Length: 304
Image (cartoon, rainbow, N blue to C red; front, side, top):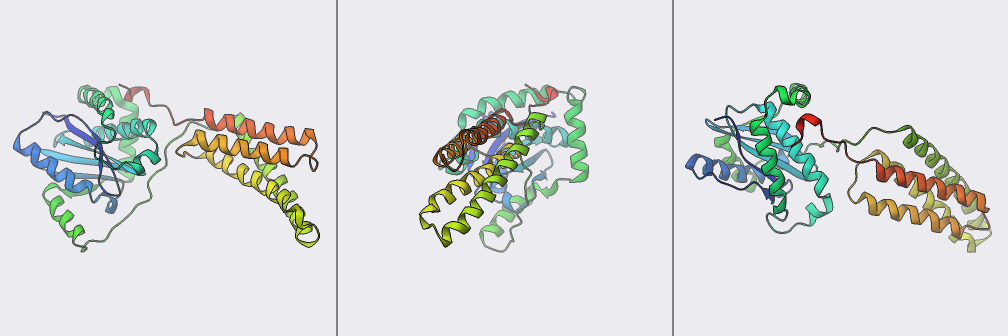
């Protein structure tokens, strides 16, 4: 029977299981495959981001991204493209639910066991879905697999390879994994980037000029120098947060915004009220754009 039997999410660096689907299969072949999946999960760091371990009746597919890897046990006749569609959707759902800090701080197995409900829904959806129902995702994954095919392993070799790694005889290969996809940049977002770069440049120029004067004549002006350089750094990080995905984005955004506000208030006297209002206004616009630009929405054909 062509289907997904089991799926789990593990931490790449040590193979710690974070969540898994409820196991209702107890035949010997499946239990043996589970053991091999566990062995493989502990050495994922040495492999590229996609891989398949083929067996006679069952196969293991895995997809690594950042700190986590999604793994699945499927029947050997289950479509590889469909399996990676499932794993990519599973990875997206997990990344949307938990940040990298929570994953890094997890100390016990199955710390996110409640995610099992999402895994079960996705399993049911993909076990019932046809190729025509998932045309957009099918074509996308098919193209990606042609460009970067998954590494091919033999299911029987996974335990042996795990033993070699533990014994120190196998090298570790770490691949740069892809970043999370985010929504398209908007015209207002581009405007906020331009204004942010302009504010950062103004802060840097004023800070450098004031630093030259302060170090030579006015040593008490060091506080003002710092108050110019901090907003410059805040502007740089605001641009980064808007363009790229980062965990705890909301907290970082508010910290940067309040830093800009406090520094500009501190600079009252060196800047007039209109200048202060301009810098705080740009910081507000940038913060709003960061908070409203989220991870890319799921494709309609891949929903549950």
